[in-house]
Picture 1 (cartoon, rainbow, N blue to C red):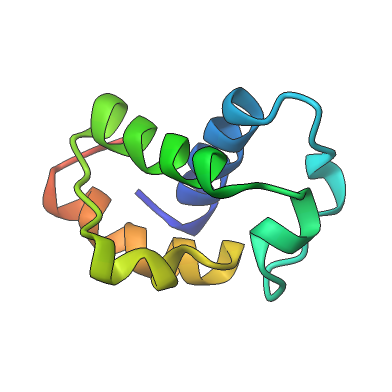
Picture 2 (tube, helix red, strand yellow):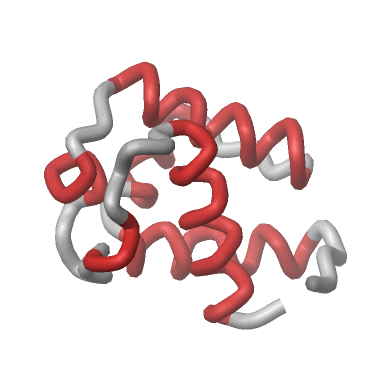
Length: 87
């Protein structure tokens, strides 16, 4: 599991949750909600997909770690590795 794999996983989940979002211009440092016009339900759907697909739990107090693509990757990479996910 590496950064590119985690980036792809995150973007794939966002594409599922927000199929009309243009993911081609997502900037790593900017808040995903602002770039893609995601609302609270979209965000919760992303968290639920992480749990459903990959058994990754994101507690409420850690939601801020998922604000940008970069922070998502930094937060989720060790979690994917800890569950032994190999892509």
